[in-house]
Length: 253
Image 1: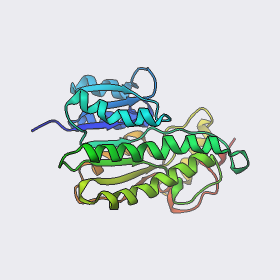
Image 2: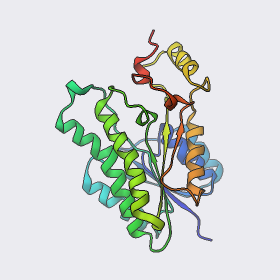
Image 3: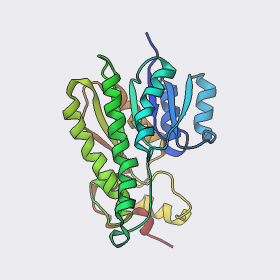
Image 4: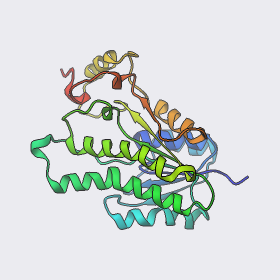
């Protein structure tokens, strides 16, 4: 049997690295997209060393439609076939509320966070030649209860969430399309340790998700042959009630 192949965008770092690592342990060869040169996060480097998984890195700026168009063909040229799984994980993030919004900023955010995933999915399905690939979009728990923060990012993730179900219908039996919606998973330097602890206690489960738990959901959707058009919220239950603001604005010191 031919080894399974996964294309993971933004797959070298943070949650993307955890997803790539989990897929390596699931037996996938990996086409790991990156925007610019850099070393893999330790969780991925360790998984590649332990499993011996075949992998190759592909550089592409997803804000450039031409680079998006070239990515799937580049993977096919390298591996000799189309991926069995596409994980649209790469994302652009920016601060700003509605008064700060510009057409240019929104266009760039939509290109990276919505248009690129949709066009990669289209390219994959067109190239799959009778195989039924799986596509998993990484969205955000805020799609269930919109917040005014990071408005361009929020709009783009809401668009990708809606695209998940729309593409599932459009592709029909040719591909399965699902989404994973994480909550706060890896806090940046904008958060204090005390704030993160308070935020965790706000969650119905009393805890925030880990990157490995997000990766678990991706791996399950990759093999769930009867599932399409669905979203799994991996957020400690954050989506169950409105929070009013993004996590970074809540329970600050």
